[in-house]
Image (cartoon, rainbow, N blue to C red):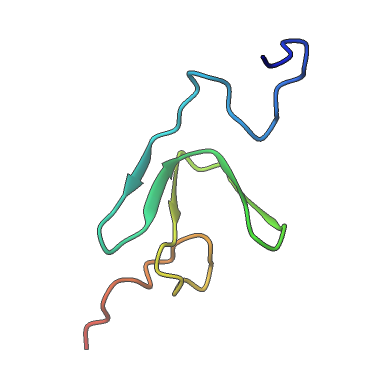
Length: 75
């Protein structure tokens, strides 16, 4: 049984405090903001926007944020 006297983990949102995440086919992952994104190398990206587009194709020059590089270029 967990110890109820422990401080809550700051990396885990409280129960009932859910964020909406929308996966766009062939596009970004949309997350209701504000968000703090912890990358594999330990760096953190912060966005205070109400909706944040996270790159899913890894083509973005602003990775992990989407810059619409996933869209086809028209000639």
